[in-house]
Length: 95
Image (cartoon, rainbow, N blue to C red; front, side, top):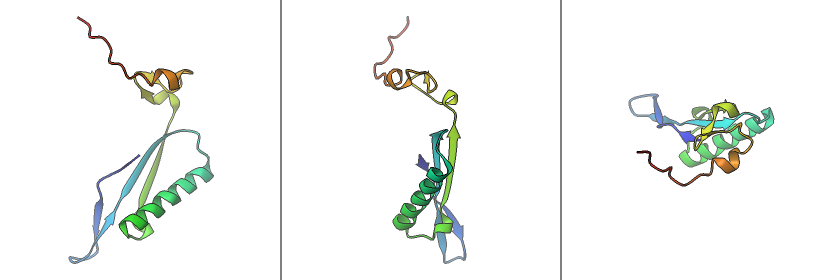
């Protein structure tokens, strides 16, 4: 998850309102209720942190299939993904 640069809306020359855009990249599989709660809680914490109205917080959930997600050269659909993707050793250099 990352928050894009804070964008500003200009209501007048004197007033600028911050508009955070929160992008969440996640695996497929969360149900609608979980997504609703996730969006609500991300919005709430952002409202409290930046002291801005809720309608100025944008949340984008991007679901990615396991075959389109990889770490350490292993796709997440591999049955041994959790083990194989935790490789911390650098590969030997080829000559």
